[in-house]
Length: 269
Ligand SMILES: NC(=O)c1ccc[n+]([C@@H]2O[C@H](COP(=O)([O-])OP(=O)(O)OC[C@H]3O[C@@H](n4cnc5c(N)ncnc54)[C@H](O)[C@@H]3O)[C@@H](O)[C@H]2O)c1
Image 1 (cartoon, rainbow, N blue to C red):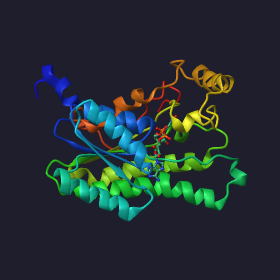
Image 2: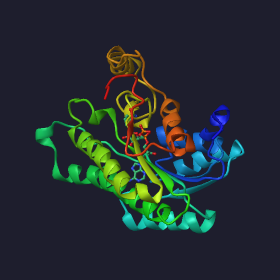
Image 3: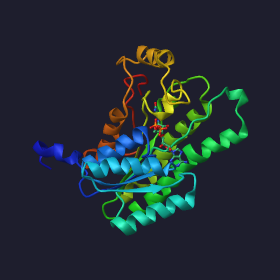
């Protein structure tokens, strides 16, 4: 490999990528980043309209794109999505599991229904995505790259998000176990563990039901986040999409089973 041209290895031309959770936040930015770097991107989300919106943004920028409505907690639907992608696009090289939900409340009051719901989406959904993509990638000479989403919540402890945190800790172990088993098939499996990112998931604290922003509440949430982060800032979705692009590309060809932490230094491992 010619080291003077390594910048080219960050491109993903010719790769077919699926981003689950592409309708919002980090998933949308990741889909746009992958398309901008040359991939054909399938934007999948439970919110089909939102996935279509992301696909339209990619299409308007001249990228190759396709949208799909899918519930990551539905194993058959995920298997079917992966099979359809291969039929329609001739392969599957990148699978990004960003789709997730949140359950909040004190540990001692955690209802079984809520626990089941978040495990179905954030934990089992990640397993199903890994299985559907991994089975296909393992049969391809080129292998592939699976990118899961953990969180700073798996590295640090915050009040009232224990159900979310336990799923995100499990995602780290899912990533390592699969990476170990499937590495010989040239399939890489890594996780991204962001710090605080302004998205639909986090703006719930300060966006009112009518869509307007409660500025005082926003400052009360974002201020301490910045203060306790070594880089004194929070992230935009694009700050995380760069990690997805790196892990999807051949620039990370020798990296598997790892957790990449774009978190401003709030947790260091
Ligand atoms: N925002 C943060 O501060 C932050 C920090 C650490 C980790 N994360 C993780 O990053 C990932 C992306 O989060 P985000 O902040 O962009 O959230 P977001 O709420 O903006 O986007 C999540 C997307 O997932 C989709 N989704 C939810 N349930 C789904 C399901 N069952 N099937 C398919 N799609 C589903 C939603 O419709 C939405 O489009 C998540 O895994 C999240 O846990 C976020």
